[in-house]
Image (cartoon, rainbow, N blue to C red; front, side, top):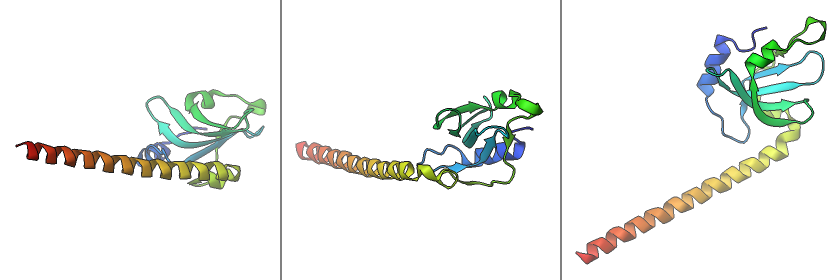
Length: 139
């Protein structure tokens, strides 16, 4: 089975990089024998590498995985790694409810980081205004 079709490649391109706490899973791959599942959230068509969440390979983790390698895997009984044709796009937390607390924490951290960035931007803007005022006073 071809794991990445032109339609999927186009969809990955539309979605782009998902540096968010609960990314949208665009494609799901699995082994029909065993329990390994790959949830792809991003795809690089040049290198044919996905980024996403992997379950069932000894330890669940976020990481990169090669489509070329996955398509070359030969499983027992002539089976191969397959793409789930019927799962549809969902957020990662919908596929992996055990990640909800982890994702909630990531969202809180992102919100806190965004607030800190706004505060830093405000400080820099105030400092810039103060420098302009000092320059005008010196004239």
